Length: 185
Image 1 (cartoon, rainbow, N blue to C red):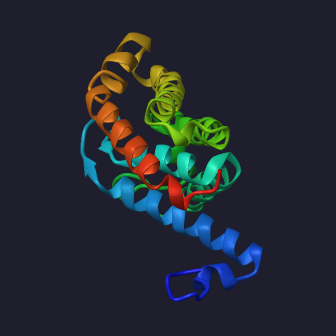
Image 2: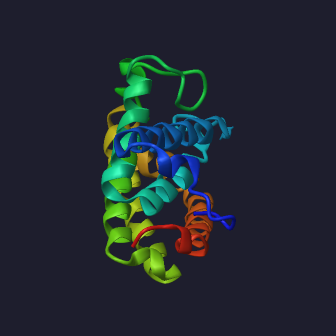
């Protein structure tokens, strides 16, 4: 209910419709975050890590995982939801494919931790998100290594992104902990 005693419009919808709208809304957020981009090769710098970590912490493992899976499916079917004007299975199997897989794993991990109370404390949520960021980098380097070699995958696929991703992680963690009164659990 809002301050006037009325029920919010989303709360009046059937549960299944609410879940669909939440997943679609989060997938749109992910698509928009991919468009905030600083081009670089072989992996562009985007706001996707911020969005992925925030979605996991806010929606939890199941809802967040569904939202990220929907976003990946949209990209697989050719919708331009990834960085640049790219999409399709060929793009997903390319140099950035590991990062895309890592986004799903990170969302599940951060969401799982958030459901168990990590979103209540900034330090706990930041540590959960650091684990999610590690998963993104791990999958990303594994996917990038065949194109660049393992050492170069680390130096071009992790090192340049680390400072910005730490800032995004801290911003996402702070945003979620400030908004915790609006979240379940």
